[in-house]
Length: 239
Image (tube, rainbow, N blue to C red; front, side, top):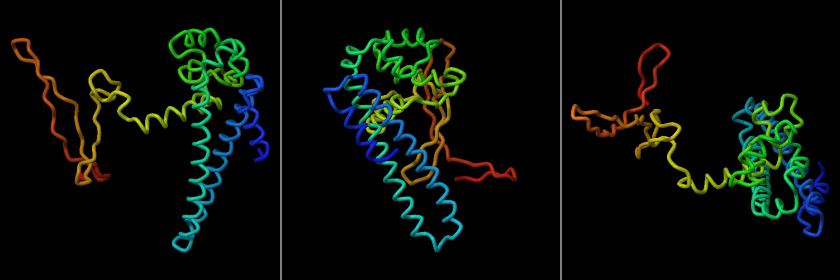
């Protein structure tokens, strides 16, 4: 999509005097174009990188230039996605007031077969916008999928924008979510690798619960162990 068309779409969705349905439709087209450009950029960079790697070390500078240009394009796409996601979440009340559940489902291309499930999700605290674009995960564009929402990862453009915003939040606020390896977490009991202050990799096993004869229990924290890799010949190799 040409740059002039993208700027025109931005002008439409940013114009508060326009019909909100038109603004959201323009935003969807803009984000879809950004996603397509990001995918094309990645494919082109990967192809160029493979070609330049064959000429190393003589092509090292050219490879660095290609990588820098690719990272700039990726950074710009990510920022655009995050800003669109922030606009959607920040204006969710206005959207839900102006458009009904069915109106928004029509606009987002939600399959009629999934709307009963979507309505249940949207009845929660997330609301209609959060339910369709975040909690539901794959409701958007589900009418375009040949087998409903079974194609995981085939995320609609506005859903992808909200996901990018959430990823940014997690990167900037890692303490906002509980430790997944803690008691009650999804990874409780699993081994995890940690980086020691000296740069070596260590294995930390879950705490051991000791049950006494008198019925009492106590938790014993295990010391980290040196990371060991089993070589192909069967011998051990410490990292």
